[in-house]
Amino acid sequence: MLDSLLSRPHRLLLLGIGVALLLAMVFGLQWAWLLRYWPAILAGLGHTLLLLIGSVLLGFVLCIPLALMQVQGPAPLAWLAHSFCTLIRGTPILLQLWLLYYGVGSLFPYLPGIRQSWLWPYLTQVWPYALVALTLSFAGYEGEVMRGALKGVPRGQLEAARAMGMTPFTLLRRIWLPCAIQRVLPTLNGELILQLKATPLAATIAFIDVYAVFGRIRQETFIVYEPLLLLAAVYLVIAGLITLGFRHLAGRYPVGE
Image (cartoon, rainbow, N blue to C red; front, side):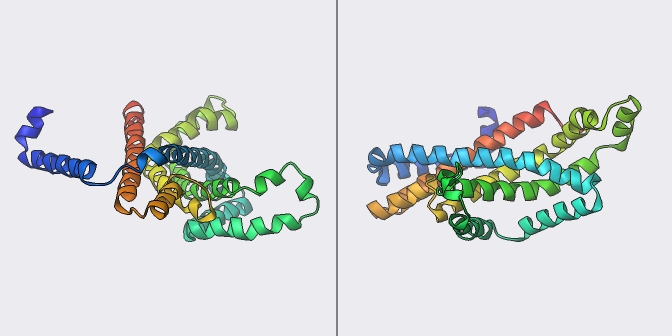
């Protein structure tokens, strides 16, 4: 690594500039507020990660039937799945979130018996609306990606599996779906990072994620730059970890093998 840096002086220059900027931020800015707010920051970070992981997992589970309906489903189901994906991809996530929370959410209190049901404690909180909105958004985008991946699996593999007597479900579970997922791994990296950057929208409905915590810090301390810089660093670290994870997966399961 040292030889690589020495052979390319511009990298040494960029590294030096980065170190200088880091030292300037550490020693030249105000960070005393961290001692007071770090528990809230950690709690908000946990909420952000839970929202990200939950919406991605649920959205990916939902995108598979959406893709299958478009590829092999009956015409009405294919039309419904395509319309859903088009609607989700063609409208802002913020609009979808507000329609769920301020629109659909405002109708629940008028439903007979809903206040006495087990659902009511959840319907009065904000996190279910944020989770559903981000889940549907991720499913809409990934439904189109998985549709292309399913179509991209070589027909020879599928015909060979059928010739061996595999049932449609076994073929999907052992051949078709694994090959499609392997093909979308590079795309999923970018989609997860986009999903991460969409999580701050939940703060607009009073969901306390890490973005909302740093907003409260700026309001209470009147310090602007330091909270924003640290918040940017938090998102950069999470995005970097996602990228490293997908690079590891891409190395273990390269496309085409």
